Length: 438
Image (cartoon, rainbow, N blue to C red; front, side, top):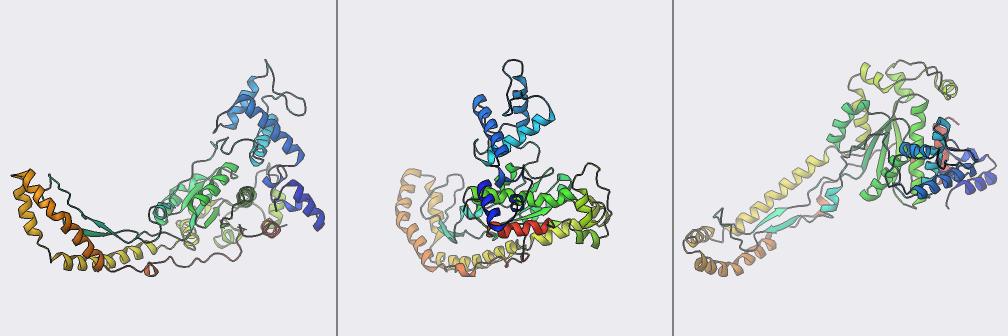
């Protein structure tokens, strides 16, 4: 069943609750609530302007704002309420509301707007090994025909090489962090363990969330998102905001992908365990009262953990990542390839001893003095001999049993992650609300 503003209303009536009890974010931000009349109106207004001005894909909303403002003297942009669009904070916020709803309602093309506020994801979970070597095609042949190399002046008999020994993890793991100040710690870890690092600035944009879904779709493996944020009202809401946007795009595109999201720090338990200091919340923080009623006074930054317990942030992230990534897999695959290569080498040596490569080398060297006729004679002879050698190698090389290929150790996920794509809508809402203390 497609979930949107109308079906949320029907569900709320059936269950006997408020509509807003069935959304995880505020009514002006929740993607499943984009059809609420005021947001839909703003979306259609923005989409009309997008078409009118013919903006390019990848445009930045702030630049669009100034295009709209610049029309004021000639033919001012009129908002749905009949007032002109002006260079004010309120009108800028209205543009943001309209542009976001227009993306969720697919009234403008996917990728229409770009995210200049957040750094680009740092990608290390590369699935190219899967694409290059589907399955285990372990043995390949080279030298199966005579190919004279006039610079090397040596004869090379047919031989074997191994391929397909690639350490491919069962999961693609992404660590999302609310700010890039931890990159000096997290990026080396991402490189070492092969996970994606997605730093941000504040709440995750719709653009970054959609790109995560696109990466999961392109990769094909289950995706596990681990969220790192400060312990404050914003840090508590950010994982839900990302999960909700991922959930929406999976629903909107009807994608059956295996994605989970779990906040891994900072948690109230970690703040207590490491005796981290609490900082007074800003007077402008509207969520302060609810947060402090639930967790006590003040907030804690990620930097406090690293300052007071150097290396602990990296250890926690590594332990959580290694729930899904097997750090021993690459070395075990390399060892398996080495062992198999020894078997192949032994067969090669045994097969090739039956052929007098030295004789071919002597004749090859002599062929340089009378190249055309001598080479043609040797080449004619090897046209049958080289394939014969290659065939003998193929018959004698041991087959590698794919069942013996090293597997990643089983994952050890948390029992109930904050978000899991296999849950139905209401079950997932229960998980959001428990996290939010509702």
